[in-house]
Image 1 (cartoon, helix red, strand yellow):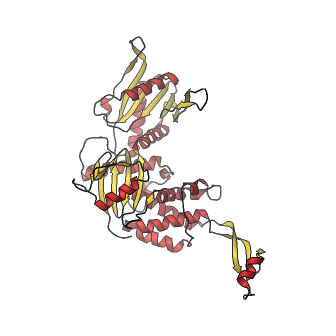
Image 2: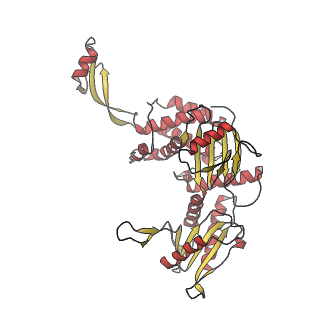
Length: 418
């Protein structure tokens, strides 16, 4: 597909309608998003004549139109500079904590500059297939049945009589063959053909066309979650895993427009709360100095019915320091705008304080670090308890990802040691 692409840029929680607004979608595109929403997607909610996005960010491609949903942690209005800042930040965060090891591919390895998250994923997939073709596609043994001109394997006598009564030079046999036709390649080829159909980046057209010429043609197959769950990786095919993960993302998130055939929908969306949590965790693991242990999602049981399963609590990040301090962090991608955290969040941190025997706990938000707050809980007698500290740590947003990661560690260490 070489049609020029149209970009609509919105920030999380914005509304996009077809009947009014500076930025609009068409009624056909809204109907396509409405049908896609009917499949249970959590990326937006339907409002009157439009959609309202939530905490999920990324890209929705509807036909040839790209709808970018960017993260936002300040009140600055849309502008080219502002859009680029948050787009680069999102791509940088995904490169650090990518679910299929995006971090192993730096921007310098990419042949095109990603203008959207979608460009990044398409480029990464093309790069992975180029690598697999260069190193050689792996072969596997498989059972094959059919007519051959030389007797090999086991003769299927009834079918041989059925098909070859007048062709005595042929044999209908079942035999084992060793070739590149297997499930891994069926998936990769299907995703490559999909990429050819939906790609709107002219910089990738030639490379995708070359890959389709060089990749052996494979039979079509239906794919679902079960298809990928059945895959088994070993030492021989481990290097396929990254390409398969991207193919899974593309194939399972693609929703063809059956009714009109124009507004196909592809969604590559990410929960910003989860991405923020992973980004903080990876940054602390990478740059820690006074921390002896940094764990994500540390589970601890706190209730069990007479019959049934136990219930656990899982704080986002658990830290132990060289001075034997235990710290619990809970991350929230939200602009507090000067307000206090919600009572529910503060109650949750109180429980973490108790159950993890922590010296300090904190809620971590993006924001102006100078506006962070120290706080303490009251005990049951209503006395301010200095030993039960729960703070609000605000992290300044930086455009330089590496510096930002270093700054995150410094700000958390300042909180821990303060």
